[in-house]
Image 1 (cartoon, rainbow, N blue to C red):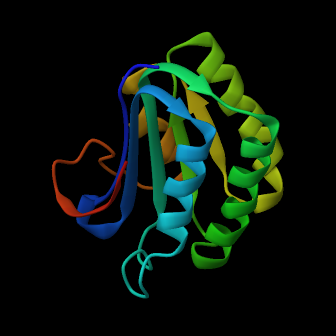
Image 2: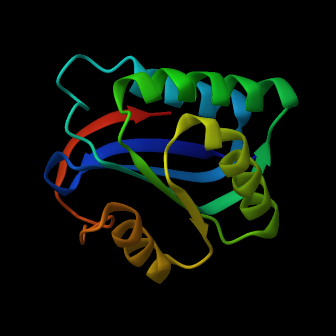
Length: 149
């Protein structure tokens, strides 16, 4: 398996979270990353309104059924912390896009409006549709790096 990283940053004046994954990533890594965000100290993620997951640099995903279930479970913990979140996923590859569409369907019970797109230029308009306001998901304004694995 090639080298991989998953990094989560608070961006855009504290209004957004940007997760960037690259290389070959395992389901276990995704679970640990989402758990770390859910376990963030009080006040760290409380003002976040959107989550942008950029999976456009993935070369492979090694995901077992139990990993998908664990990601969904930790997602429920995140819902408790961030009930009004909107989510946009960026995935260029067919496999990643399909997996994120499945996640989108499975997570519908979370109550987070979610879109999965294939091109970077679709991200900001999707977030604007979901939030009702313009945001900068590619903002260089990084307040804090929450996780790097």
